[in-house]
Amino acid sequence: MGWVKKSRAPCCIEAATGAGKSHLIAAVAASINQMSGGKHILCLAPSAELVDQNSEKYKLTGSKASIFSASAGQKSLQYPVVFGTPMTVANSISRFGNQFAAVILDECHGITPTVKSIINAMRSANENLRVIGLSATPYRMNTGYVFNKWEDGTPVAESQTKAPYFAACVHRITASELIDMGYLTPPVISEIGSDAYDTLGMEVNSTGKFNASDVDTAYHGHGRKTSMIVADIVARSAGRKGVMIFAATVQHANEIMASLPPHLSAIVTAKTKKVDRDRIIGQFKAQKIKYLVNVSVLTTGFDAPHVDVIALMRATESVGLFQQIIGRGLRISEGKSDCLIMDYAQNLERHCPDGDIFNPKIKVKISDNEMSELSAICPLCDAENTFAARPNNDGYEIDEFGHFLDLDGIPIQTEWGPMPAHYGRRCRSTVNVAGDEVQCNHRWAFKKCDACDAENDIAARYCIECKAELVDPNDKLVVKFKEMKKDPTRRQTDLVLEWGVRNHISNSGKATLRVDVVTPYRSFSFWVLLDPTFHKARVQKAMFDSLDGAIPRTITYAKDANSGFYNVFAYNEREDESP
Image (cartoon, rainbow, N blue to C red; front, side):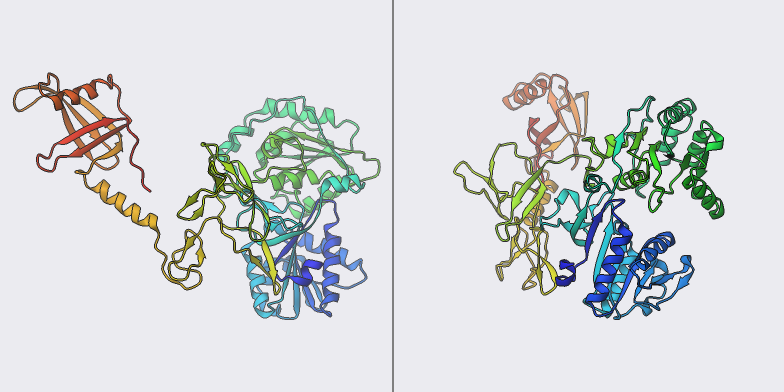
């Protein structure tokens, strides 16, 4: 609770599935309630099931709790610790004022605009409001970790987090630690005796889901393969108690069901009626059925400790979902020595390339090109930062602060200061100042204000200190470049987009070749004499003949201001580049 005592910045706790997250929420809520002298605590969870589960664990402490969730059937603020769902709380936000000391977020990796709006509203009533999140998987697809620094204060690598909401992860309880302590069942990655679905080429769309056409191609119409996979699951599950099979679609799930023993199998989807879902889950937990096929449900918050087989017959878009699915089989249960993990959809290759399911690859989606990383010590606060490395084709030495060094060991200078060997601009470390987390001021690349000498981000338009407009030297160069490209009478080198050659007779009756050229900036033509009699024409033809019929990549030219004809000076020179 040290962070909560000293800092107002949001923090989070990573608690692996099976760590007893509900008990942790109860303990944190009780502690803050006591530390604040009896103030209220709001505990938010994304579903009514989790609200009920968390509130029941809190009641085990001997204290009473309120539930504020329409889907859970109650809207009460009678007791200081309140368990609620976001929409119900947001619709009655005026009732959540300065009597609240903290907001605790379950499944905090899924923080939504609604949850943020609740926190902002409550913080306007109490500027000292604390925010604590808990998650087994504190990362999100495309944006990486949801926190800015690790519990030891080291900033998360820039390639692993983007705009994190939480300032720090203040405590971690990993699955490996829980297995070593005997609180979780060890997973065993099983060999598979059937071909897997080909999913590595599937693309995620803008909604964070696999494209429907890719899903259809990967899973549907493969009845023989599906039946062989199911047969392999059944064979390898012999002597085991509970098998959860994760399918891609309802159609896919029905194909799976067709190959399972009907009296030992059931299916649950998002469209399954609640009464039927409760009955099926009850039968599964009572071990009256062995195989439970599900589609997009039972991935989080589902607790059936006897499950000792997890069969993934679908690819997961996110590593977080993959981890949540694995977690369904790690609860301890009497007579259960391990949990068999069978992956028929290439999830391990996609999310855990080193084969360790507890060490997933967390990356921010920047581009399709992988970048290497570079560690750089901040000269101001000594924090170690990790940034994407710049290309180093010249093999420069790099100092501990992340600067390129010349042959004398001196940092190479640029208009932005010493040249960084990485793409980081500012130190990502934070320090606590009067209860707030403030980012370190050191910048590896900066734009100095001519008026007050303050260091500003290189993209800043106005000075952060004196608000004067910052003049970017590059802007001047760009303007000059554009002016040059607009004036065809100035010598320039362009890429060749189109190139056409045809026979032509000049006005004086001489045989020539007419060459039509299109570049990104203009279209023009020039002529090559086939039987030149003067030096300039002979040079022109010699250059053209050197192409040997090939189309040049670039052309260097200028328009004669007097005649209006274009003169060509070279081919395949380096193109003009904008600053």
